[in-house]
Image (cartoon, rainbow, N blue to C red; front, side, top):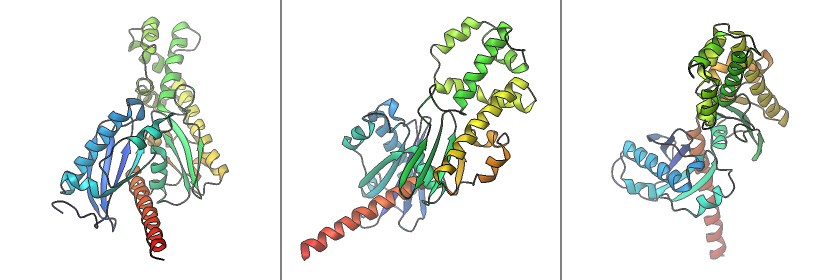
Length: 310
């Protein structure tokens, strides 16, 4: 498809904005994939101007991939999921901000992930990555467990795993715990200097702590007792999120995020049994959100037209 797009020809764009990257996908009215684009981080903690700049760059890249002119965005209905949209005032600021689309609807990135995972049907997701959250959509109502941010929440996340590993390494260094290869590995990364760990911790972010999670999983797979204890506890915490969503009434729950695969082998058998593979990704959920918004807007316009002509 080349050139500009008529506004009578409906296109939909779904955007998944997270703390690492912002991804966009364009589909036509029949659901045919047209193109995709990528840009940098789009979490609200970076500021709304930066978020919308990333959203626009990803969308323009998707338009280029689809072979349409940049001004074609003005004819597209957009669904945009963003990390951190629940931060106080973030949504209001987003709604006031200019955007390049025909229409736009915003949601939490976990909401679009849940919509995509279950094709818009009722269900729940547990996201285990740098952070963690449990979320279900049931009869249009959003049910949430956790996800309040590290370090006060995000149980079972990469950041929590890294924090527990660093704490354990320090205790082993002091002789309060039996040292293991994991503790030796982590302390060696700081020159075996506990005060270097302290200095690092004063600046460390959740992402910094989560960077140690792969090492913890590696040591756990090799039988390190300290690493196994940390990973087992993380899997138990994620299992509690899954179970909590089931108790809310979620008919299906999917496990998503960067730790979904490494954690899956450590989950308890009854939790593994209830987890359902995701059908689609978060961008598909964002496109679905855009379609629903456009359909609602069209219904309102039709009703208003009918009323005016009565």
